[in-house]
Image (cartoon, rainbow, N blue to C red; front, side):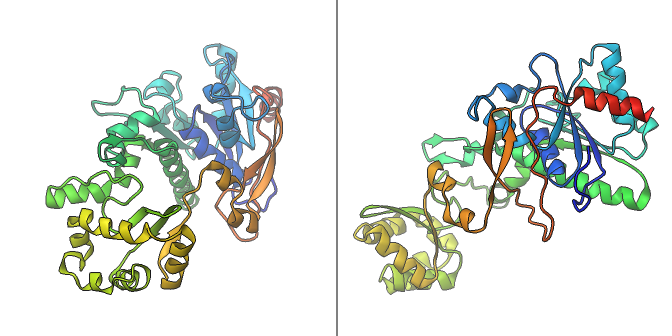
Length: 384
């Protein structure tokens, strides 16, 4: 399978032994940039994400999002002939991506040392919940569970009601770190000729994102409070009610704070109040300050508040639900929507946010289960 040679990763072969979200998100980005991604699926239904839903004419929303532009090959790796075919694929691959449980690929004979012995330029990337060693090595890991273990749920939600993030942030983070690590390894291989082993831990990805609250704890012994649709470390920052709805606003520095008090609240005296003179003091007196803000904004319409915020140069945003995002005027104006083909027909798809000037991403078809098995096996036979 060939992609336009203008794509940065054209000519790169990726073998993906993957399912669900984390590894598929990693390899889909490689496919978007032109890599030939051969997705190995089990014969008994393939990638489990195929069964998550049937939103797109019978095709799973998750699967369509994560697997466009790939080639689906069904192999039963317990059968000698299929196992041998996968060995030949890996011997010719530039990149191997997987998110099987630690130890599973080694039992198949696909560990880094075994594969690199025959393919020293191979970039081997494994994504797991907790990494290939340590006491949690064999613990099952899914997005919700990693959000909990990493503390993300602990800092998300209302003060008396913790909540998970509404999208799969642990999977997405680990997929992104896998993708960026593979790109770095490709640059390193171009200089040295050597491949690389990459181990991505979902827990480590999300704890990296947790560093500000972790530093607050390490530096001050203080746990940041859950603040709902407000910031747990910056005040004022978040959703505030007005007479006919709510607005989101963000004050980031002393200049903005002074303008917010004078031009939005019509309370310039607040900027001179010692209780509110720095962000740390505003955070310490949060309840008092936010009661004042709510009292003022509660007398104004949403349109009036937004007009004041814009005039004062204070950042603000709409609190959009999913239908509004699907029709977002900024996405429309920038031409971010395109179309992908699936078994269930053609469906809208967002262009990936790589935005390389002059490089149109590959928005390939979402493959049916095993659609490319014969094609890929024929290629292998032709390669000898």
